[in-house]
Length: 359
Ligand SMILES: *[C@@H]1O[C@H](CO)[C@@H](O)[C@H](O)[C@H]1NC(C)=O
Ligand SMILES: *[C@@H]1O[C@H](CO)[C@@H](O)[C@H](O)[C@H]1NC(C)=O
Ligand SMILES: *[C@@H]1O[C@H](CO)[C@@H](O)[C@H](O)[C@H]1NC(C)=O
Ligand SMILES: *[C@@H]1O[C@H](CO)[C@@H](O)[C@H](O)[C@H]1NC(C)=O
Ligand SMILES: *[C@@H]1O[C@H](CO)[C@@H](O)[C@H](O)[C@H]1NC(C)=O
Image 1 (tube, helix red, strand yellow):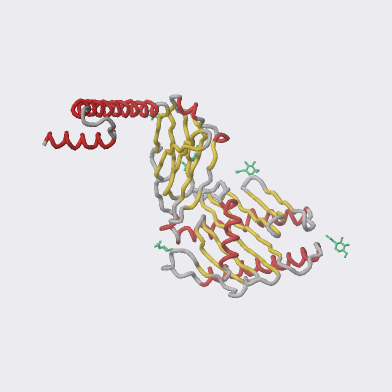
Image 2 (spheres, helix red, strand yellow):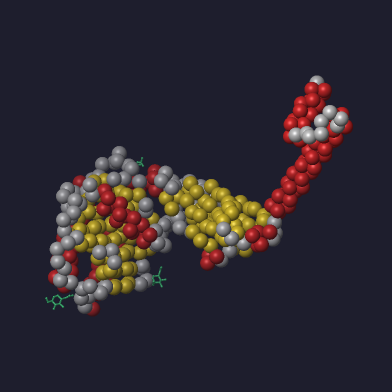
C-alpha cells in the first residue's frame, strides 16, 4: 500500500541521489504525510547507491531489511539502532510539521514533508560528504545541512525561523564528529553485506547509431548494460571531444536489469554529414582496463551509397537492355501477326521462352 508513495518519493529524489561526487552513498529518504491518505503517516526507505536496503514505516515501527543478502541475520543491536534512528526521524518530522502548520496557518488537507539524509564515500573508503535536506510539499527547500570535509553549509530555508549561531555551531560539531562517522560506518557495513550486488563490475557495450530525423541526422552514442553507474562517455569528432552543449541526453538511466544505460545525441545537418568526419564514441568504466570505442566515418558512407547506386543503375541498364533485345527479337518475329502488344505480357512470355530454350 505504501509502495506508491515510496516509489514516487524515490523517483523524486533519484536525481539528487546520483548527483554526488562519492562512489558509494547511503541515503535515507523519509516521507511524513499528514491528512487522510491510504499511506502510513511516516515511511523511510534507505538506499545504498541505487539499491533499496531497508524499509520502515510508522505502522510497523521496526525496519525490514530489503537487501539481497539475507543470509546474514541482522544483529539485534543493528536492528535496535535502525529502529531508534528512524523513530527519532519520525518524531522530528512530526514536530516540524506542527510548527509549519502553525506558522503557515495550514488548514486540514494533505501535506507532505520529505527528508533526505545520508552520506557518500569515495572508493578508498574516505568520507566525501554528509547531508540532510528537507522539502515541504515538494516545492520548498526547507532547511538543509551540508558538510563535505572542507565546507559546512546551513540553509534555514524560508519557512521557519533558522537556528542562531550557537545552535549552528553545535550542529556543525555534531555532523562533523559524530553523524558523519556513524553514517560512513553503516554504509561500509551494508556495502560489505551487499558486496555481491554492489561490487559487481559489468562492462558497457557500445553502439554508435546514425538516425535520420527532421532537418538532418542524429548521431548517438549509446552505452548500455554496465554496472556500476559511473561512466565516462565521450563523443569525438575527428579525435576532438564534442562540447557537452552540443549534445542532448546524457542522463544515466537504469535498464531494469540492475545495469545502466547512457545515450548522448548529436544533431548533424545533412550538409555536415556529407563531409568526411570521423565520429568516435568512447567509454571508460571501472570494469574496463582500457577505453572502449567505436568509430564511424561520415562522408565515407556516401561513397558506399554512391557505389551502391552505381551498381543499381548498371543492373537496371542491363535489365532494360536485355528486355529491349528480347522485345526487339520477338517484334521482328511477330510483327506481321499483331500490331498491339502488351509489353509486360510479352516480356514475361519472352522470358519464359528464353529460359525454356536454355534448358
Ligand atoms: C496566519 O493567521 C494570522 C492571524 O490569523 C495572521 O496574522 C498571519 O499573518 C497568518 N500567517 C500566514 C503565513 O498567513
Ligand atoms: C565542498 O564544497 C565547496 C562548496 O560547494 C566546494 O567549493 C569544495 O570544493 C568542496 N570540497 C570538496 C572536498 O569536495
Ligand atoms: C552476506 O553478508 C556477510 C557480512 O555481512 C558476508 O560475510 C557474506 O559474504 C555476504 N554474502 C553474500 C552472498 O554476499
Ligand atoms: C577514427 O578515430 C579513432 C580515434 O580517434 C581511430 O581509432 C579510428 O581509427 C579512426 N577511424 C577512421 C576510419 O579514421
Ligand atoms: C571519468 O573521468 C574522470 C576525469 O578524467 C576520472 O577521474 C574518473 O575516474 C573517470 N571515471 C571512470 C568511471 O572512468
